[in-house]
Length: 402
Image (tube, rainbow, N blue to C red; front, side, top):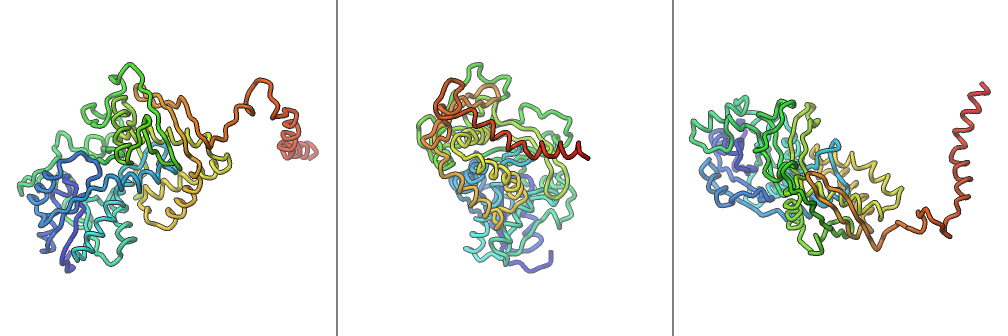
């Protein structure tokens, strides 16, 4: 805490932690603090965010619109891998953190700052994601992680500090959970959600309606893919951010994309998280359906074996690591023919595939038909099965001899 710092760039969100941190940083390091905020589609008033950052102690505020970059350069690569952590979490926060860190580091270089800071706690995953990204992108920058060095023991201490200093905060004792939103999802954790037996209150959700009150009539949607990337919805070609926004609206209206899970954090503890990911849920289901008719069987199986590791790397903060980049190259190679259209049915929290077609389809109705055909000799299967089962037959015979 006594090291000499001349200027700090803080990853600023306007939440409880980063509302308190600018004042604390200035009191501790006696240097300018620049608040850096990324517009990732969190539906916030940018002018109000800037005003608040200045009110809570920042000397300058920089806001950048990164919505298209988030979806094009982070969400789409993960979608091409069907990335999902522990079978449930679609990595909404995990994908956003390296993007914020990337631009935070760029800002630090441009204004000659020698330190970067973030508001992640010493118990969570985000501290790792931010700091690994800083190290990978500019190891000369000093990293200040207030939660690891200040005297506050928990968020109740922060609330008291904020009230004493007159700092406006978005958290109350009645709703003390933490939330993080971007175009891909919104997450909720902490506070009243720390009891894994307690059902979340319906008024907590913001991106989706409850499946019980979703429309009684199904919604059909068609999504076009090109080389593994979604490019159009119902025939209308859209930019990455606008496409995801459109599917968020459709999915949210139909109660799609809610998950309530207990996940394994990288630091070693289990944590309960509640997520809404309507558009991402639809896209992953659609992408898997598109691959089902365009990917070779063995290519698909090898790639599927890599997906858990790839997802774990992103969750744990290794977006800029060479192993993630290596896997991305391999995964992207599999996507060259993942092009075509998928039709889905959205109904009361469910997303069902009801059609798929592609000019690169490997599906042949002539081969799979139960009717008479001229392209497949069923007698060929006799030798195939005999050879496939030879080792099983030999093992059984040898056991009997012994």
